[in-house]
Figure: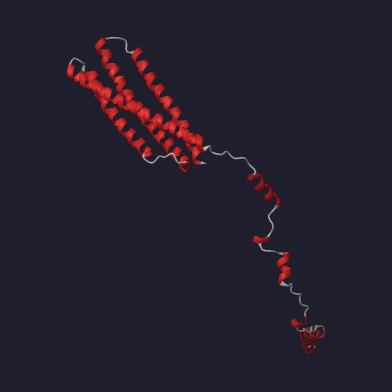
Length: 241
């Protein structure tokens, strides 16, 4: 009995190995010969270039050609050189006239101040106001001359420099307008103080003079501001020529 049990154990341990050996599959591998594979035909350089030309040699797109032709056919505004020269001369004449007027006004304020000091019967407020006005007018004319002379020294009547001179003239006009606008802001408190001082001495109602002088200064500032906007637009147009 003991032997049969041992025999069964031996057979159970041996049989799986036999099964594994009896049912195993052998696969034979073959090496692939690379040289025996079919090779692709090389496309010649000339044929490849014809099929895929370089980017710089490719024909332009038709839409791009149409757009470029339309853009070239667009009308553009030509600059009238003669008209521009006449306009520059006219504005230069106006600028010189304004400079002469400002110089005469400054001399008038200085003469009035000298007369008031000589007579000695003018009030303190009047003397102070004319002193401030004379000094302010001298400073104004000084900067005005500096602005104008920089342009007039380099200006000429050459048609080749018509646009350049026109741009310089407009820039000079813009600087002069800014000078006037700053003068308005400085003049406003001085005039109001003078009116207030004079009304206290005369004991009259202050509202009519205050309203009149402030309205005048504000209107003058608005007019100069309108010219400022106009000159800025002209400068933009001339710069794009």
